[in-house]
Image (cartoon, rainbow, N blue to C red; front, side):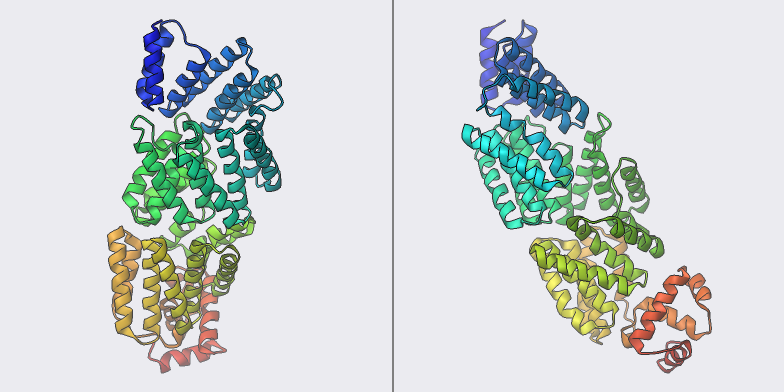
Length: 543
């Protein structure tokens, strides 16, 4: 074996030329084998090139080489990374086997060794994912103490990542974000090695997304992009990272780019099969397709996400709404809310629930959902939640026939979406604002808002929203009493003597939904009977 070849491989590794280092180490290995430390370099280069399973095998070989040399601490560290790489690749059973082997090897390591801290991380991570947050914090705090004592920067990064992420998930947003920012400073300064750095980048972005901290998610996604660009050979963005990156693209309005990222994520997470994040990737893909108006493709992606164990809601309910199946959509969101207890998960569903329930005529249900969202926004102090709550509150006020009150709330929502750089949500609020102005009789202001929404939806490629706003934009007389267009339709048919069943058949609604619409009409117009509603319709020239 050429000593020069190993020297060149080490130089390439130090310069972060991963493909070159991998090729030279592979050649050295074929020429007669390499030592334990060079096997660790070989494994690291393989993982960074996207050869995860090969990388895990190489860490396993390094583990055995260190055992033969009598270095239990180094052997345990290599077994730890062999397991972590497999777990991250969706092979939890094999990964667990390597982690158990790491624990056995660590038994021969000194009590003050950093490897004991590393071994606290996987069970703490499992506890965090299972929402056993007290247990998770205990494990991460123990790992953090070992990292401090041993001055192990990689362990400190992993432990702080766990502590900060868990604190954010339990609602301690400011404290958790400060810890995560501290971790990211170390990573971006190059003080953490490459594999832990990649884990930290992806995990921080995922936590920010889960806790609705979109500005941080966007900022650290940009930092991750720069980090990858500095290492041209690095396989940029693994499956989970691709999904998070696609979400950032989606919310900032880059829908076609987001769709490409989703397709890459689905492909990467499908080979080998069984990786748990593939369902999430399919759901994100379905969301983009739904917004683009590609209904059949979106439905297929939602169904595939469900097949892979990812709940396809609330996106599928919103798709049903686009398909004119408001009752099915309402049943779905009611069931999801009934089955969902965690506050953050409920907050992710509530905005869609408001839209769906309003479309189904359940104004009372929409009001309850909006009120819960407003309360959550007040507790968490997160900009996304504040904007979503204001948008939901404004939409319900509008449906309740209170357009003047709705205007101020909708303006606040629009300002929030603008500040967050979320053009789709901002355009939806402008469309609602146009409806509020129309209800107040200010048609010029209504047209300005609807024109702005129309332009934004056109730029984004939001087909269904574009069609809805185009229909709204046609000048219509303002409905009396703040009635919605659907309520006017119901009132006209009732005034002609039709029963609820006949109205439901004509408008493709359920009788229950028609009854809700009638209840809303009676409340808005202060009427007490169908006869009074008929008289009102004739007096105001609605028939």
